[in-house]
Length: 231
Image (tube, rainbow, N blue to C red; front, side):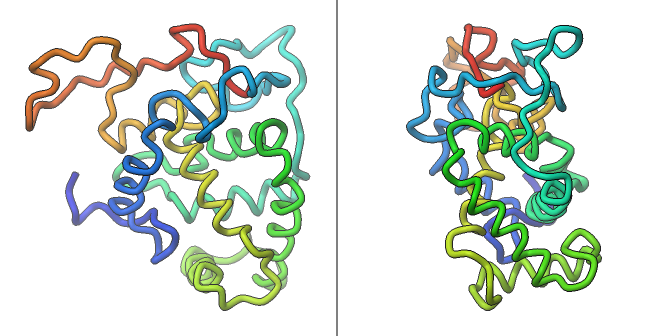
């Protein structure tokens, strides 16, 4: 990928895409190949289906008979969440960002299932983010002001932000962007395309493994093999 284009995504310097992608590949390789979070099995993620932003390859079709969405955050909290992850991984010339890729859907599903214990942290953290932003809340700031505030929060220089909130937000944003689409994020495989990850392949040929080879993206989700996500 072109270095001149790689602008953003690491916890928050302000988030340089190439660095975050490298970190995701090293620390989160399991995420890209099927798990929503380290140590979380598909069996643990069976909750109520969410009929919102259904990703490509989701085994649960939206439409008649689909259970109502699980709502873990208020509308105001969701607005702040989307505004923050939109600056962590923005849509740019490299492709869709976090919101366009359904990362907010992933996070809401996570907060209603395997990450339910972090819901209070999100609720207090999002409220503190709005308070720190002043009148109108975080979503009302322009992009430059949002970036500046998030940079200060990452540096620990903003009072009132709960310990661990920003780190958890970054972690879930990474997982949602680069995890299997079955979990609600990585819509249309945007995160995998950004990484250059072709999708799940059961057979890798010698040509595929050759140094410098370009493997054609097949966009295969774990759902093809009967995986069950956090619907």
